[in-house]
Image (tube, rainbow, N blue to C red; front, side, top):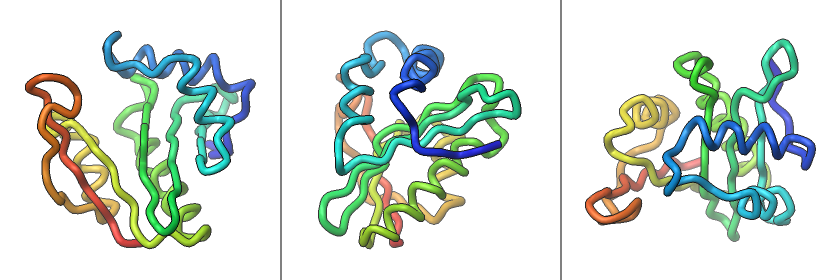
Length: 146
């Protein structure tokens, strides 16, 4: 399986992942993903399976010495196989290489597989952001030193 920088050609596959990973009100639009791909301070990574199909995507931002993990989506039939973790590790390597000292993320506290993955990668919980994902749905803010 190969991790590479996403291209505009990957956009339809990324949008299909987005549909499979998030409820309608939580999905990023085509315009949002296009902006991620075109933004100079972003890295969008995709992971392909042996057939060349996109099975995971992650996007990261950089502002001075701080990087943010903005989104990770893995195809439902590929979850639990380390795909998301491999994308996050690659993003952490990129962030460190371009001068970031720390990476932050927000995750739903009830997304136990994601929280476990982030903890395995060294992320620790900092606090909660109330109603981050909508009324009554908080976010767990996590960070790791790079």
